[in-house]
Length: 165
Image 1 (cartoon, helix red, strand yellow):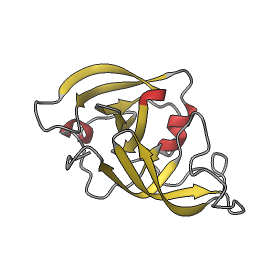
Image 2 (tube, rainbow, N blue to C red; image 1 turned 120 degrees about the vertical axis):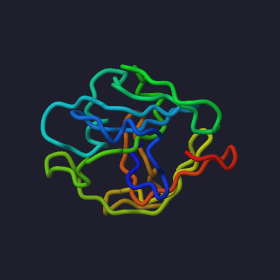
Image 3 (tube, one colour; image 1 turned 45 degrees about the vertical axis):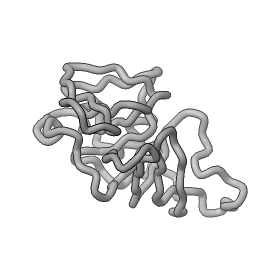
Image 4 (cartoon, rainbow, N blue to C red; image 1 turned 45 degrees about the horizontal axis):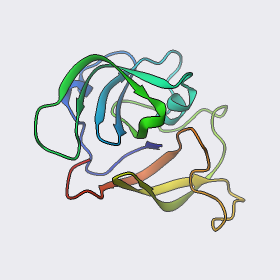
């Protein structure tokens, strides 16, 4: 899932403000937060489109940091490159200049629907997007076995206590 514009969320480290090339991201897996740069060829695209276009089972994150968002102990660990399995990513956040609108060739017209998604240790509330003719009582908010879906005006809350995520 790709979450856009999370109120109150700050980048996990200052590394995100100074990197050139690629897309600056924050990836949250069940017990870790990975921040850094994903190298992406071609024209600028939304983070959800980038994540869904990755071929293979993992994404490489360059020049970043790794930390535990559920504790405030210890300093983030730096890395040159980290391999993150796509299936392990609970959600991804853009942390740089990423287009908010997709191209007409990559997007399908959908309507925002308020909802909450429960993930391991987290609740994500915001606007999910469904096809205009979909019946809200019968369609899953995110009806895919593998992939990322955009969420806007999102709030992410830890169910493990009052920790910053």
